[in-house]
Amino acid sequence: MPSQDTGSTLVTTPVLDVVVPVYNEEIDLEPCIRRLHGYLTAHFPYRFRITIADNASVDGTAAVAQRLRAEFPEVEAVHLSLKGRGRALNHVWTHSDAAVLAYMDVDLSTDLGALLPLVAPLISGHSDLAIGSRLARGSRVVRGAKREFISRGYNLILRTTMAARFSDAQCGFKAIRSDVARRLLPMVEDTGWFFDTEMLVLAERAGLRIHEVPVDWVDDPDSRVDIVSTAIADLKGIVRITRALSTGKLPIAALRQQLGRNPLPVQGVPSGLTGQLIRFAGVGVASTLAYLVLYALLRVGVGAQAANLIALLVTAVANTAANRRLTFGVSGADGALRHQAQGLVVFGIGLALTSGSLALLDAASTQPSRLVELVVLILANLIATAVRFLLMRVWVFRGSRGRS
Image (cartoon, rainbow, N blue to C red; front, side, top):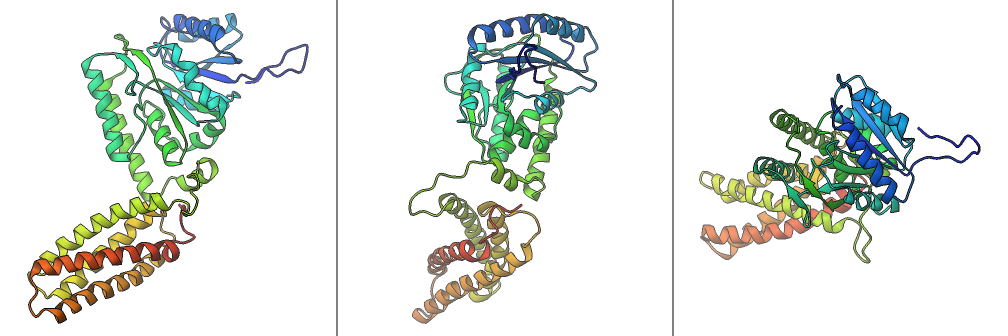
């Protein structure tokens, strides 16, 4: 939506495009736009645009939007025939020519003083997305106990199910760089209230930098958002995204290569080694516990060598699959059988180490106690684990990391 001065070739493309998505807001729309326009005119040092995104209003919202568009050169109005806040944002952001794209709710619950801190890191190139957070340290929030509980509960669910690190997914005060939006938005499916969460989860998984701004926020007592239906839709969205990420449906690795920020190199340490070690250790702890439980259960009916073989084989298959996906970031079916075959070779080496330790124990003691057996096996497994990580890194998954 670029415009030009009729007397010159000076392009008046804005730096910032602030979208205000609305549905049946004929009363609140005009005071919102006047207040926002006045603030940006007085305090924002760059060229800006305000876009009213009317998603299928059936009242007088469209007429108000057109009147404001005629009054202010910086105001645009877009009318969509279908409802959905996410649909409205996706449409306007996709077609905008501004360098930075933002949005805020029409009730202006968030104090406008946070707008410049929100977009400044995106203008400078320091960050890729920015969100206002009501849960960050320094935020000042006025709202009822019910909404506070729901908000904190929802963000806790995101942290536990998706390992999300951002603190507030639902605050209606966000911004994104347009070059990032062009790559990211085609992957965002939701057209409603889950749009924000889906965008943030995908951005975080792609390695993008998300900047958080503490905000002053006052709850709108007249908000018409249906909390129950929104919560159900959000939970369905979480399930959908979790499934898509676990099956490799989303090309996160490709997006990371295009836009992601790779870890800063550390002299003497291979790229990504620290993160891989942490994830490998987590998988290893879970595998070791599963192995010990299986061994103890099997030992009731079979000998030590047979129990060790069965327990190690079962956990080795699961361990290879988990490390393939979680530690080395390989998803999809391509190469899975080969990786499992190579993993069985690594398993054989681990079996030789653990079985050898049992053989040495039997040679040293005619009737070792069950506790001594377990201690020896734990030590042998620690050595086998170190060997397993080395072989997986330099042989099994070498050249496959980041593939989706």
